[in-house]
Image 1 (cartoon, helix red, strand yellow):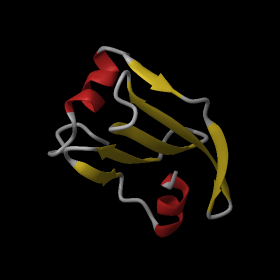
Image 2 (tube, helix red, strand yellow):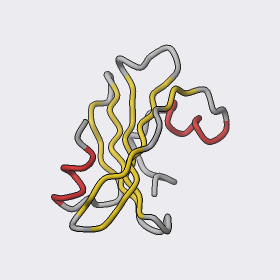
Image 3 (cartoon, helix red, strand yellow):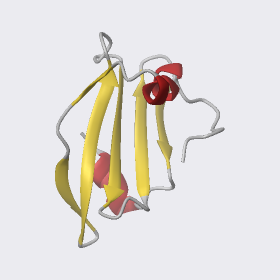
Image 4 (cartoon, helix red, strand yellow):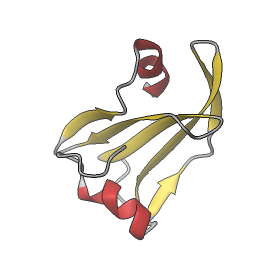
Length: 90
């Protein structure tokens, strides 16, 4: 979903290689009548300026992502529907 996407903050790419982030427990949310999981994380030591929210299906085959970065602004990945955008809200 994020591979090769321009404008992605370095810390988001680094989450895969260097898991230095703060994460909250995932929670179940309903999106268009389907059960999904919502996960939040931020860059360790910089949570006030950099965080992400991902909502994904139970089978893991569909996910949408919201990245908020103080320098780069807010970006969405995965073409979220209006209902998914609502679920990505904090």
